Image 1 (cartoon, rainbow, N blue to C red):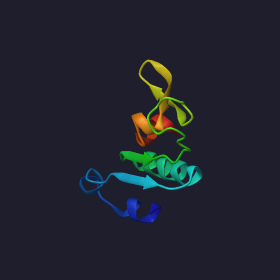
Image 2 (cartoon, rainbow, N blue to C red):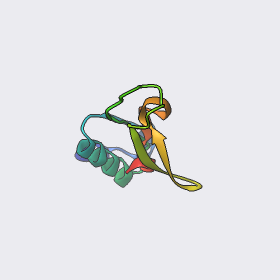
Image 3 (cartoon, rainbow, N blue to C red):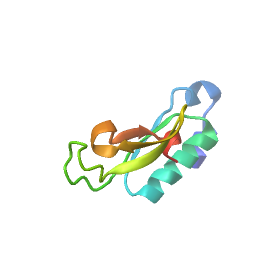
Image 4 (tube, helix red, strand yellow):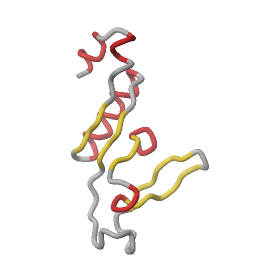
Length: 87
């Protein structure tokens, strides 16, 4: 993927967006790859969801927001997040 992204011109690269799902280390690697090439990236997080309605807060993840760090519930606020807010 790195070689392919490196081979793209600016016009082509402006049309690329990365979408990733899988284990957390793979998502982080995908986010880092996308960041290096300046392309948007969204990740689908996998967390245990005990209630799936946001009541138990068992699936929370920390994200960066313009107001600072915040906790988001994967079952309610996600599961898809902007990768740069998570990693």
